[in-house]
Image (cartoon, rainbow, N blue to C red; front, side):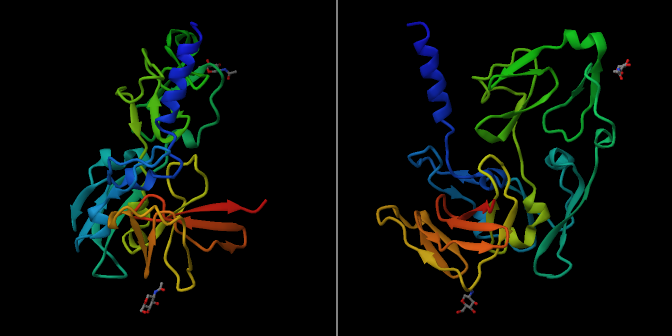
Length: 283
Ligand SMILES: *[C@@H]1O[C@H](CO)[C@@H](O)[C@H](O)[C@H]1NC(C)=O
Ligand SMILES: *[C@@H]1O[C@H](CO)[C@@H](O)[C@H](O)[C@H]1NC(C)=O
């Protein structure tokens, strides 16, 4: 009997984030999830007022709004190795905005790999390590077990099955209590900085892999896009549609797949208001 209960608990914990659609673009933009869920545990839709109805002369990052001339506080951008970001009029289109920014490198990017007796130390939401622990002191570090892997105190850990969350290993880490752990945090994507014009100009996120938090690119609508109707029962109400260019799709609808040299795009309306695309690479 003893073995059965823990096993059940693990299954339940995994189901709770088994959402089978990429939603990192919504969480990164600070969109509000609907309390309705899909059968696989994704929010049924999101509310993103600044995306569906952006105000003129504003920049957005992580659900916060900045006016032209505003600096974006560093704590908002450091996890992406971005500093000195500020909101500015677009160079190409004076009616639009862009974020000017600097990307920085960490010293460790240029250093030879650590020898076995050192452990780099990270802080939550930081880009670079803040130091390292070497030699005998390594024995004094706490360890964390996560998804069957053992980490040392100070190491950054990815959460299996939840690509948008990371934790820093610290004493007392419990892999079953990630939600309430102050050393765990949401990974943020920076497409609002890198790709402002597309993100706020009607594009949809393109993902290369379900296990990645952030979209790899954004795709603008094209006149050749064709809708393939899905099952008829999916559209509960108007909040359950995706608008893409001139097209309106119900949940369950998709675009006719299209190929590029390296693979195939599958784009569908799964979690409104944005469609998303998955790219399958040709082997
Ligand atoms: C590994 O790092 C430690 C501490 O910096 C140093 O004392 C030691 O010589 C290094 N070992 C090797 C094999 O480089
Ligand atoms: C949307 O419709 C307008 C007007 O019919 C047309 O000019 C435009 O090319 C269409 N856009 C796309 C992406 O199909």
